Length: 120
Image 1 (tube, helix red, strand yellow):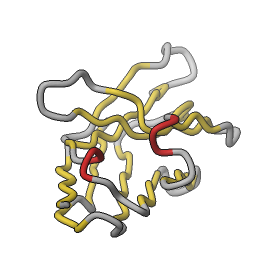
Image 2 (tube, one colour):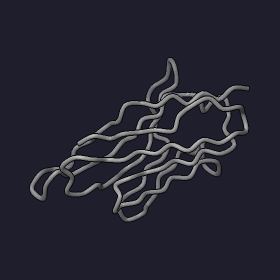
Image 3 (cartoon, helix red, strand yellow):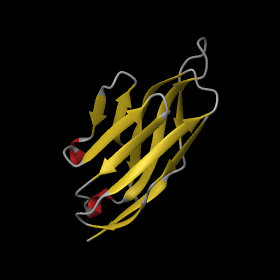
Image 4 (cartoon, one colour):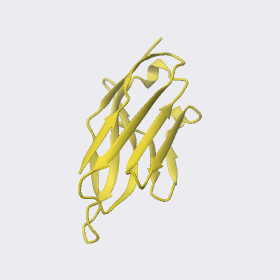
């Protein structure tokens, strides 16, 4: 299983970016798919995740500014980030909880991070 993320970059405060992530490989089901981030000197933290049924968990720090969306058929997840702030600067990681077969337990998978830098 591989998670391929794209869409990071440099943006001014108040601007927008969109991150996308696609899953590939032997996949039976994707139970959760979403994004975490890690700023320099800080622990990795949840940004937003969405279950296969559509339930969403979004960090309070980004509520109202970030929107997560999934396409279950395409095995993709996107994060629309609006009104970006310098404190949103971090490496963003795509994350998914995936079952590779009907008999296997779900495993946690991570994509390579993509840098998001917000200048003031």
